[in-house]
Image (cartoon, rainbow, N blue to C red; front, side):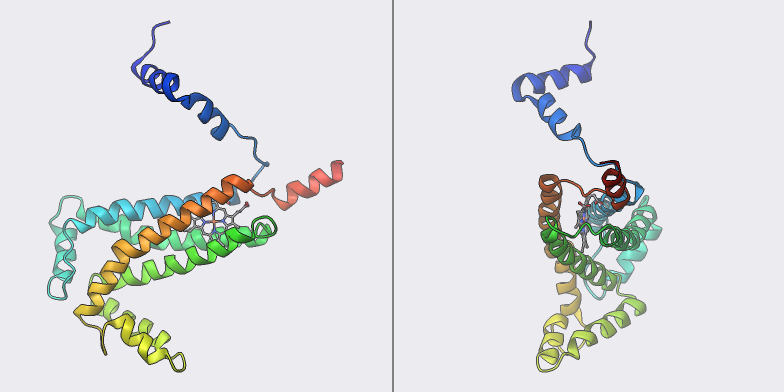
Length: 229
Ligand code: HEM
């Protein structure tokens, strides 16, 4: 039978690197009979990827200075081809990522999927949750609007109220007494480099553990199985 181009490409890699066997082993694994609530982890992963791709596109026109940031965002929305769409995806994507993340945590909690042998994945998850909140908080300042400015004032007052170290911590986060160019610069660096890199690393570990330990069985399925035996 004559092979089409895709089959030829697949055959090329399969002959040399055995990708067919690898694919079968990894993708055709038997897993417990899970329900739709198990999709929220994957949905969060999807929205993280949307944030990375749209964020890179926004970076082409965004300017991280207090004089230019607001106008550069307005320019993206009004003048850059499809800029409004990319920015819309980025801003809606951040909200949807938080929503699906909360749903994912709720699912894991309600199904008691954090128990032995998945405790480490819950601990890593707490790290992922905290990083995602900081990811979103640092991004909020970048358009340099009145709302983002005052949200940052209030948000940085919170660690500032910790006894003893609070005032130092607040000054460290802001890069000075008040919200200035130094704050914008450090939030920008955190938002586009430090946090995405840390999130990607932790996510790799999170998914590696899911793959190694396997996905948990839904409680209802477990009860059905116990009844049968
Ligand atoms: C950026 C955030 C996160 C992403 C992208 C993510 C992604 C995923 C994916 C794709 C799975 C496998 C499918 C599923 O169970 O939905 C999973 C499993 C898991 N996640 Fe997350 N996750 C994140 C955050 C969290 C958080 C905040 C927690 C808890 C504090 C957590 C705890 C777990 C646990 C315990 C499992 C294993 C569940 C099982 O075997 O049933 N994850 N995660």
